[in-house]
Amino acid sequence: MPTAAASWAGWPSRAWMALLGALLALHLGLGIHFACRASVTHDEYWHLPAGLAVLKSGRFDADNLNPPLSRIWSALPLALAGVPLGDPSPANDSTALGDHFLQANPSRYHLVYALGRCMNLVWSVLAGILIALWGRRLFGPTAGLLGAALWLCCPIVLSNAALVTPDLCTAFFFLATTYAAWQFAAEPSGRRALAVGVVLGLAQLAKFTCVVLLPAVFVIWGTVRWGTALPRLGWRRWFTYWGSVLAVSLLVLNAGYLFRGTCEPWNSYQFASTTLQAVTQHFSPADWVRIPAPRDYVAGFDRQRSIMQALHPVYLDGELLSGIGFRDYYFWACVYKWSHATQVLVVLAMFSLVFSRSGWRQWRVHAAVLFPAILTITIASVSHMQLGIRYILPAFPLIYLFTGHLGNWIHSPRRLWRKIALALCLPGLFWGLRYHPHHLAYFNELSGGPLAGPTHLLDSNIDWGQDLRELKHYLDSERVDSIGLAYFGMVPPARLGFHYQFPPSFKEMRAQGGLPPGWYAVSVNFVYSRPHTMRDAHDEIRAVGPVEFSYFQSLQPVARIGWSIYVYRVE
Image (cartoon, rainbow, N blue to C red; front, top):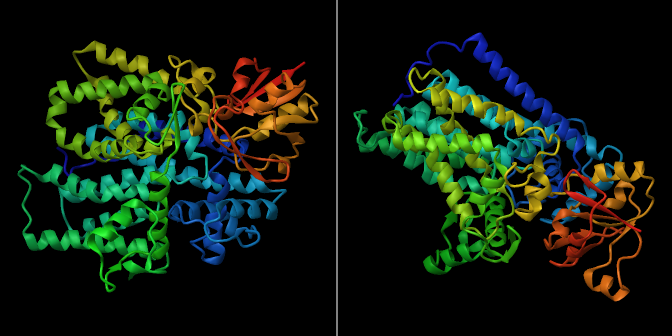
């Protein structure tokens, strides 16, 4: 396998750089357009003001449900421009935080979100560059470009890259940590141990999911070094290096929270999650036992675990489960939402790994790259909270890096079928972009496209509240003054100028003997029985039951707004 000291075979050629530049430009162009066009989505409503709260007031408890790195990064141009945060909100009241931010910025609300979204695109661009460079180093120039193309042309990546959420930041640090760990394992040194510690610490500041990288870096070390002729380290050096990795990562994590609440006693916490409650009950820590992490990080991790352990409605292929989820949820999510070109290439890459000589020769490389991805997908598959394919997005750059090794088939002198397979798949990567700017609602052809998408998956797979502004434009063009609206999202529609009331519930509709004449717009999540909440004309929140608006399935919509909101006209 190539070592960390292996030659990069010189600088990339101009043609290679030009092709990578074209892919990056395409990704950026589509991402910026989507960022400027889409409405503020469900979770974005509090992510951006939470980052601004840290920069303006140093508050990490405005919403500690996620670590602050990606939020701070997205909010940086807002802080520099003096964008107001709004009235102070109670700790961990994300709805109030979003409401106050909207009230403080009514005229430029979507502009400031567009700025934050463009900042978030940096993570996907960096990931694309690293995939290209590392893939080139591992497998060759064509392989690096193929891996980057898989990433940069993926509708799932594009739809999440242009939103202010931590998912793309997390995906980048999964890739960067794996790369740093691979380098460190191949050629250990104090400098590389320091690099692993820094990147691992930054990953913990991206999302709590990155906790799985702690065991992953040790597995990568063993995979790269076990049973090889690489020089052995003495125990003293081994402990020194790995002690440095852990110490530096903890230092970076605590620095990210400005060392606030670091090393507070374990018994000072009132844990809500059964996981940490069980640890406390089993070990009964003494009063002197302290946690070497910031208080808001520990409290946020506990809060996140508590939410993950709660019952959540999970929808797959028309079936709604609450509490257990589906063990094959993410398998089917990839079946429905990966482009067919991506699916074929990933399957071919797996076959190449198992049945080709080159696959066996490079098994250590493939195992080191794929282990964090497999671990992430496995954990997500047994989770109760399966609300979208974005939960396994951190695995994507590693899967695409691995799949990129098929790029070498273009140079295969004897097996013509390999070249034909690549030639047929490459245009398909770009074909998946044809639904722009509606990448969130992308479904591939065999799944029925976005039209049939809600029969398979809901939530952030198709409807995250991204088309509210498009609905307003449509209603204005049709000169509709008032409408029955059931919207899945946190932005109060009245703030965008909607004059609306809720459509009748199923019980109300039956009591009235039918649906009154008029215009109706219903988010596809509600049409297909996803329970959640919605906001009335006074910004109040009320619950929506699982079948409250499912009767709209029997009606034919007159328009579909971005595939996420269905519009009906009842005569």
